[in-house]
Image (cartoon, rainbow, N blue to C red; front, side, top):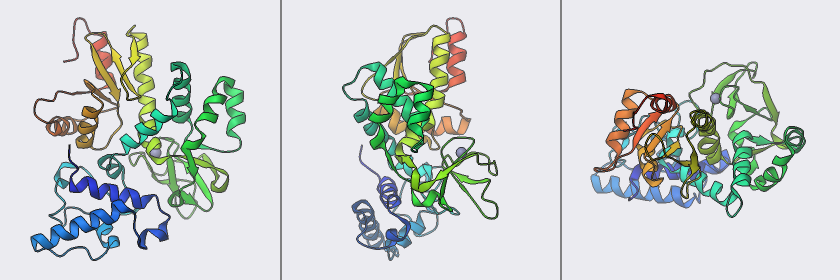
Length: 334
Ligand SMILES: [Zn+2]
């Protein structure tokens, strides 16, 4: 599967998002960003269009990819949102989905759980899923709750990084009370969520979990979106399968995939996504039969099906639909 210009652009934005604010506008740029700038300038000149004069101008394009003169970036009609948020000026979840951060997350998790027994792997994945940030207090709270998790916590420490600048407000880093990922607050009181990493949570909910940014380490951004976010739905699914006496075995190289045998054999994985197109691509890479999502509307289902190449068959189902099938009599997934 060759990468589209849109995917190159998303990777360029993501490479820049790893840099601190001021460094983003100063060359030399990350290689992914310079590469896509060169590609688009060449395409524009070839098509007689005015190219972006600089990388900052190209990033400005990413706020509204449908504006005139941006024809070299094809595939824009296949995504729901833009790559850079128009107000918050940060990379969007769409950008991470198009740019392939799910594979980055899978790679990190695979390294963390390589060559260890299944039970220890489960603990390490659970620690990552339940700790978006860690502080000097984390070891003590984990020890009080479940001492068996301490070796797992030590083993995943390298997955945590210094607090990202764009999420620090007045020296603090905050978690969204709804999704548990990073949140921003605004003047005048800095008590209410103005924006969170999930992008879909209600605004103006009260922040209750806020720590000094200098004393906290934050989970790698790809793991926040592609491990933590689907983990809650995965837990609901696994609990429901157990209740229905359906055994789910970890499956394949992709952690998070499970093989179930009833009502008919299938490989399943839980996803939590904004964009149907990149989800279709990733579900094929994962070789799943059913992509399970927290919720689903008709438009998303249709765009997912249309994004699958001819002959490929991947079903998309909500957790509730899976449970309805399991509790129905004689039904199959298909
Ligand atoms: Zn949230």
